[in-house]
Image (cartoon, rainbow, N blue to C red; front, side):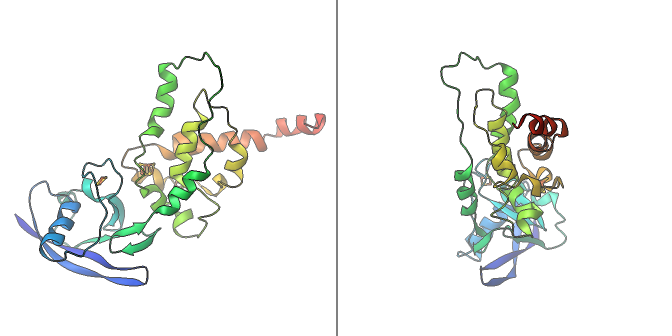
Length: 243
Ligand code: SF4
Ligand code: F3S
Ligand code: FES
């Protein structure tokens, strides 16, 4: 057992400071355990959101030593325990209190996504390859770490013009479903702002479900938009036939 120092953000949307706490680290402990120990022994009013402690509910996202992480899946012994470990709330979203942020903007974005629109009366039979293609996208636990780290949402205040990587993952899962009939390309190009993504891949790096957000979701969607709106051959025929 050793003593570890955590510097935890205490405050709200108006501001706050990092407060230092000492924690008795035990083998296998994760950052969320340390936060719970602080709540139990030193700061019962420290606010943080969590639920499953198994990396599946997506609630416990925070910035640990400046990196977006699930606190319940980040072991203390992965970090340099000889130095203070900083724990801050996700920067992209408004702080409610301490480590709890207001992620409700994401749920409003979710309502804007055209839902699954299956073809009526089809006799299509799903094959394993159809399932495999979209299965990766269904693994999302809505932790919003990708939304937090994407510079378009984080620094440029483009929140209304860009839905962010989490929702491009959802759109990819719908667009690549063989039974879906909705046309989401006009919305992807305009209201959902896929053009803002410049493929930095930061979202992919932080995804705890290891979804290849950029390569498997965003780039194929960008290609569909380009094919539809910017293909010079198609544009030529459209001009020729007035389509
Ligand atoms: Fe979290 Fe990955 Fe889903 Fe983004 S895509 S919300 S990082 S699980
Ligand atoms: Fe943002 Fe991911 Fe694109 S981090 S810029 S959505 S590649
Ligand atoms: Fe559920 Fe961390 S508590 S993902």
